Image (cartoon, rainbow, N blue to C red; front, side):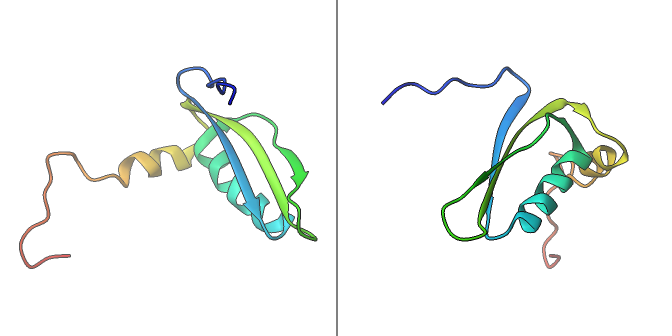
Length: 86
């Protein structure tokens, strides 16, 4: 098997496979709100109507306000759950 070429540091190649193009586009839309991204590429995914969308996201560049939400939604690394709380 040939070795797969990795994207540059800070970038991730993303592949979304869904039963319909609309579902795949919704997932890609969320990613684009958080990260800068390349133009998506769309391919048939075998079954009737199924779609595969591919794009590369740049995790080093925020796409807008959603990035700050993403960062603020993560708990601090030193915070541990307290007993009896979920």
